Amino acid sequence: HDIQAAAPLGQPAVVQGFKEGKPELIKSIPRGDREQIFIRAIISTYSSNVNSVIDAPDPNFKTYIRDTAGGSSGPTMDAAPGASADQSGDAQQGGGGDIFALPTAPSTPGAAARRGYVITIKGSSPNKNAYTLIQRTFCENLLNIKPTDKNPKKEYQVVRAVLAKANFVREDGVRLGEIRNAFDQIRIEKARRQAIDSGTGTEAPVQKSLPQIMGPNGQPIEDPAPYMDRLVPGEDVRNDLDFSVVIVVILDPPAPAPATPTALAQ
Image (cartoon, rainbow, N blue to C red; front, top):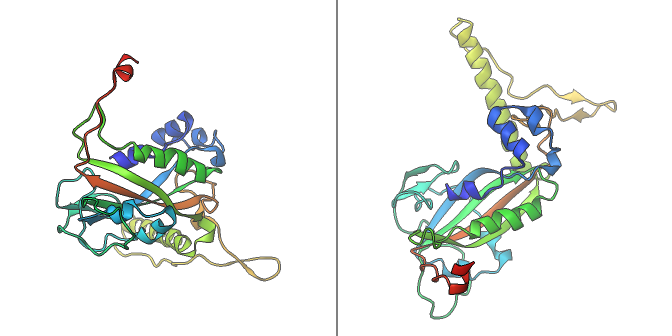
């Protein structure tokens, strides 16, 4: 998948650690130094004319962020026509045509309509310079998704890639809630499986929320357990940067310009 391939995976030790399930290798690079981006959702919206989005200024792109596919949508970039992307980025069948009207912005007068997709990419990065990593590496890689001399028949091209929203996980109450809910679901499923394995045939009651931890002043302290990285034990994800990148993809882009003699010589 082109979008996934555009995300930096991290230094070799980090990549090897994730591939082999060895947290010690991952931790050999401090969390804030890992040049890594995780993608958790890809939501695509088809439009019969994306010109107004292509011409929109960067600050307007936050209005194009989508949290769900909204029912039936157009295909992901590498899906068959008539398929759509859900939040996990998997292809599923969907209807054709526009899902809903995109917010409009003045477009270039007389420009021919270009059909395509406005895609929201949601993810996070532990890197201490995540803003730069997203803009200068991830977005630049996305903009290189286009026909090339080696692949001149590519049927789509990313023409805009904008970091539309970014904030630390600790600052986003909705995201914190999602992480807590996912943690609770894992605990509930684990207890269910343990009950089945024990042969009781019934599910043991599970307390959805962990007991509150009280501080020395008598005030509750939030248990950090739900916010520990599932893959790298002992690391808190709340200092990671959560982001939404919005890209504009046109279908049937123009073929790449023929290489110049100078370029061929090089």
